[in-house]
Image (cartoon, rainbow, N blue to C red; front, top):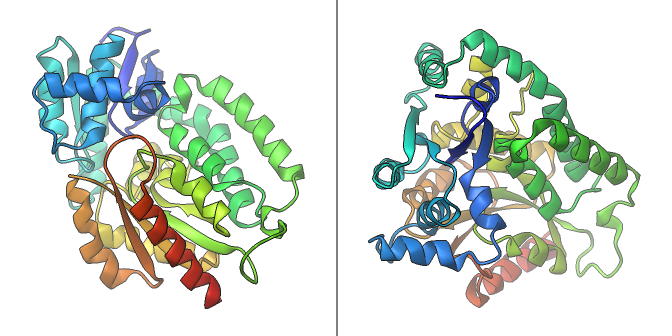
Length: 339
């Protein structure tokens, strides 16, 4: 695979190998969400035969690649993310896109993961040593992301939407890790000087309700701003935080082994409960995407999580919807009145 090309990602992958190859990583989810008209790619997918009852993320990724005409190489996680990725890759391959499958092992195994990352490096024409060198260059950015996260939950100086947008961008560092690091450093410095958000006037409760966000990043970001208007704030973003690699100085393989999202829901619950206690959360909101197999995570979450959980479902880009907004407001009100 030649260097200097854009390589699309369907989710977080060992981006270090892509950077070591001299290529530019492009998270296709973020590319889709950046479009002014997000309905157009979905309609493109419908015309190609994607059913109405398919996940909007899959349709959005497919349509975005076709509409934008780029990237022409896509890495898809076929084990550890979305159950529809295999078919998505087949569909993209039929349009002339080169596809690279990647699997996270189940059950989690360091030996199996090292073999898979090594195979991935081979496919990109780089060595594990080169990928590890690229990982060391990303440590400053990941440290800054950890500081941003700390400012959000420990000092109450970062809004939920801002934390979400920065953390979710760690999947591809917006295609330019150096520029990303510079911009993030400026944001973190400014946030560190800001007044605590939890001290704002007019809160409907004795104090701000502290929420944790669980599940895949949302196809609409209304949830973060709406919560703040209701007297709450998201100070924990489960999967987005995992994208940032909370153990950035670990060995490359160990870092992706500690990345909880591709493995078991029970393992994720351990991390969620630990973070909920540390961040003094009042409740958890589990976002589920319509027509996604991950909706079944609630079966495990309901038995393993220590805090009240509200499950909210959304389908297409746009607003969260009146029914979901009403349920979120009621959940926040109940938590606020019982603090």
